[in-house]
Length: 213
Image (tube, rainbow, N blue to C red; front, side):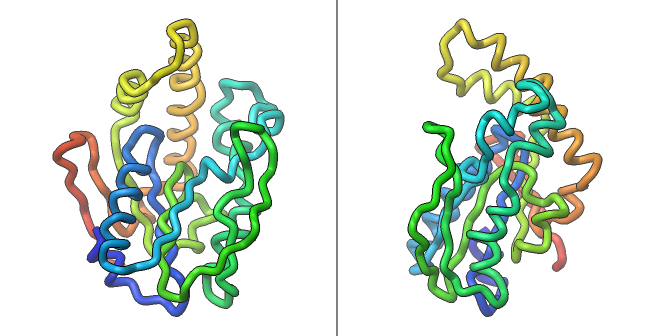
């Protein structure tokens, strides 16, 4: 995977999307890839879609379990383009903000901008990254593929929520997260736009397919 990153030449920081369903392994992959690239001396910017959420009142305006709300209302894609993806892209000044939202306080963020080196790599993980509004902002597109039912099983295994909220988590998964992914697949067809598809159903034996660019 690091070799695939090295093979893409740009005149600006390389913007890499690590997309996939919740609990697919996106964050783990991006973190491990960042470690490899940094060990090779590459400057890496790590960021996640979780820091580009909108406030809860807007996020759940269609209802807490709405799949449409999850897909259409959860993320501030305009801000993501404005403060991160466009500054690191062609013609950008490389001055970026990695986040626009603090989930703990449910408030917008406006941290001081940092400046990325010209040869830096942005590793950005999250859901719905290959939708039309973001598709042309990526220089390399990775999709981590896991069956939806398997992601629900993984979430139950990794959850540290109190027992009383287990039913709420299960409903969120069944009514919101999985149907939102099904909507994403039906409308945006993300795997068709990926340069690399990682098949991660078996956590300790992933395989991947590199597609011609």
